Length: 347
Length: 234
Image 1 (cartoon, each protein chain N blue to C red):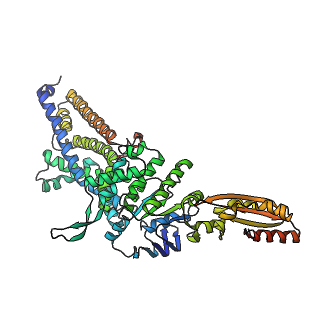
Image 2 (tube, rainbow over the protein chains, first blue to last red):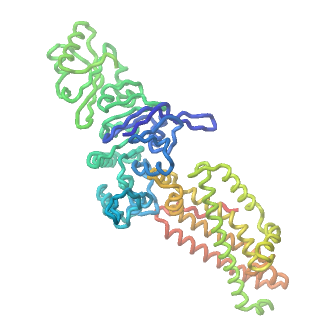
Image 3 (cartoon, rainbow over the protein chains, first blue to last red):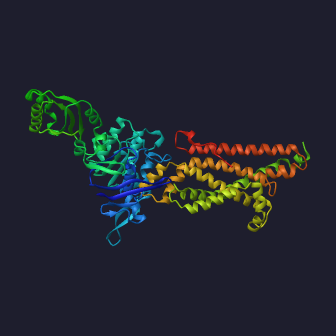
């Protein structure tokens, strides 16, 4: 589990201090895919770099599996980092190494925990570098996993963006990390490639049980793979929670702006009493609007409607205007409540 | 044909070529032994480097700049007593190589620094995220990734040192420079001077072409234009 406690980061610059992170509290459970979303400059990249201490926070704690990273020795920190893989927007592959050598890189620099049996038959734990043959087998296994076994001898400059990111993923997983940090990992990729990379990340989460932290400004990344999400705005967490909750009922202005921008915009147009309906899972197939018209005799005007597929469940937003007639409006609300539609008077 | 030309013969000129090559090679090799770590040090201790140490960076940078700003011909004169103390003599090829090293090492340091700084910071960050130590990053990331650029820098340094060696020949030591300046000019043997010039041009061309070929051949990036062929030199 990763816990960020009162985390703060202040950069000093020529024009005085810049607050990049302000009192961040986050808890990321093992096995989850945690999205951190925000506009550029909100501090998400700094936040993810604080998790493995590439950026040292100026206040607060980073606690991973009960160990406060801000307090450990340098050598221990390097060891902990082997348990936290990281991938980047620009892939950051070693240009002078082949795909195979890139994936082998972490194995060359790290000492692995090994149980060995000594002469007396006792087992003890040692840390040693992985042997050549074993490393080769591991690299091939990883390349198989990301579907690039046939490109082992290629150089990064000969690969497409998606392939480079796959190499980066294989490399990040080489030391069998428990966590994987993704810093805008799909932002440089086209939509199709993005989907295939997200699919790969999902598979890694589900089959290897790797906890994934995704930093992004793209909503669809969060929609398609994340189980939880934190919205970060101007250096602080605006809100966080399960993706379906945050996406159904975004509370903060920034979350609304990010998640349902068009809804907000269309709701500003038109007059009359507006209602925001939220459909989640089971009721999303019921023909509510027809029901309003046929069963209650109310003519509603749809200002906005959208459905999304999150984690296999359909959910949608709709903004409608009710007639000015009080009686009709009341009947409409009653009908909606009876049919289990969640609605909000406030947009 | 001048009298000196005949007197020197093929053997005389070959000796000049040999001395030039030998002084250049020896001075370049030792200059790199000193300049390479110095250049890495400048990079690593830079404020954006792996381990920023402002005072150390300032001091080393200052020393390098001082040596680089002294014109070589003046540096030779100034170094004569130092050469006598270190090498035991202020004339001859040994003293000359010493002076070349003193002049070239700071130059090489800057060359190396600029090559290593070209390495993508993102790649360094990736290595750090994997738990690489600073030493591992230098050995396994910075130097291998900068290799093509380091080779180009090496070519430029070698050519510069070769030029210095010819200059140094005017004061002490041998080589083609000494041949042209101290022997041919007083006896007004223009043909000897021209042949020396031609030989130096040929040596520079060979070094240049060979080095560039090596740089290209070892670079695994397809976009070869990214190697800066011309760098700012003093």
